[in-house]
Amino acid sequence: MRTRVMLIIAVLCIACATALAQTAATPYKQPSADITRMLDAPSLPSSDVSPDGRWLLLMQRPDMPTIEDLAQPMLRLAGARISPRINGSFSIRDITRLTLIEIASKRSRDITLPLNPRLASINWSPDGKRLAFTQRLDNGIELWVADPETGKSRRVAMARLNATTGSPYQWLPDSSGFLCRLVPAGRGAEPKRSDVPTGPNVQETSGRQAPVRTYQDLLQDAHDAALFKYYFTSQLARIDLATGKATNIGSPEIFSDTDVSPDGRFIIVGRTVPPFSFFLPYRLFAQEVEVWDMKGKVARKIASLPLAENIPIGGVRTGPRSVNWQTGAPATLIYAEALDEGNPRKKVAHRDRVLQMEAPFTGEARELFKSEFRFGGLQWTARAGLAFWRDFDRPTRKSRTYLHDFNQPNAKSRLVFDLSIEDRYSDPGSFVFTTDKSGRRVVMLSKDGRHAYLNGRGSSPEGDRPFLRRFDINTFKTEELFRSEDPYYESVDSVLDSEAQTIITARES
Image 1: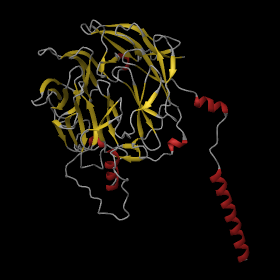
Image 2 (image 1 turned 180 degrees about the horizontal axis):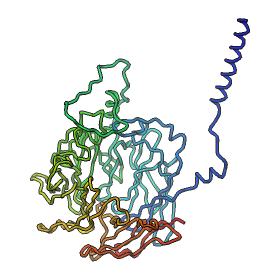
Image 3 (image 1 turned 90 degrees about the horizontal axis):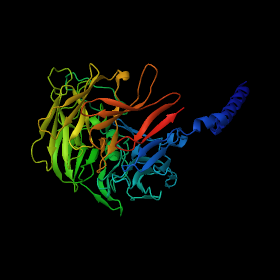
Image 4 (image 1 turned 45 degrees about the vertical axis):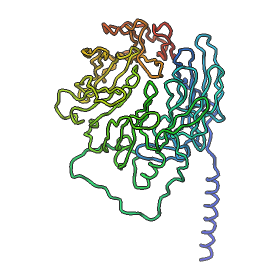
């Protein structure tokens, strides 16, 4: 009896092993040819017009990621998902083809790309003569540049880019090169997790109520914090377009933001500093906001922002926030400050104020205006000093847009739109943008400076009917120039000239 039982067990083990071997060897099954063609059919490419309006760039990416891309290692650190292989964002939908169309002649050509193209962060130079992009390799990210005239591309430098906090490069305003975030040279091996704990996992509380939003992919322990510091630390450098020479600026830091001034002399720098939090993403870690010169010397400290663990729900940080350069000025800072301690429940006449500080940043900031609701940002126009700005009231879902001429010391903001963000039928659309000579986005104006343009979805009881409208900045009246008509869904992709005589649309049947 015992022999029979042992024989049965042996047969079952052999059968299970055979079944496991067959299961392990089974490849992915492919659908029918019709389904494959349908899933692999190329979608409408995204597009971008060169600053001089000469070239239309079409960017094609595959709709379906590959198994290889989905299987690559991923780290979840401080609210970000990164690929440790490339030291950049975990991406599975890179651009694989670039096509240029000369708008005047309608002739097209594909840009010659590196082997196995996996492209991202594609940007025209301010003068429109070059096109830069990043190429993802198996072990890092490179910076490449293409010449629209020849369609050829080349690698700019051997240095590996650090793309953990967004685009790893920015064109310099004169198109002579780039401000880049590089993987620090000689940084050593990745920190390894110790098998022996160095101490307990201690979390402290102040004893006060502090509602905190729920975030994903946060730091879990000291090893995660070490990995965050390792992968997110960058070396800021200036790379020359012609020679590829990299000149370091300052020392390696965790840069959350970097932005070159329109005149190319200064950099807004946001540095993430300890302590790191297990409850917040890195954008809400403690920050040092400074202005550097191009050699890395601090010209002005703007703010030292503590860890943002006590921001009320729906509130903002206290101190300077949304620090940006004023478009159309050589080097002038614009930023907002809360007047309600960042607390939306506090009853105040004005939520925010907006301030201005000019180079060389030795004096105090000058208050430009106050906003009744929470300040939502500025949109500078092609006329220097003229801008639209908006504020937003979360409880009522009300959004208001104003026009202000900062060239007039005593000018007051004029209310342009007063809308509910939940009322799509009344949505006037978004302003059409172009780029100025330093490469910054500005609201397009007609040659006489009187008209801007609005590009909208056109929601209605009959469905969406995208439109383009001319907007009079003196009277705030609009004139419809284009509207999608049956049987197509047609939206405005680009406005090619300041008089809106020529536009590019995307049409779907």
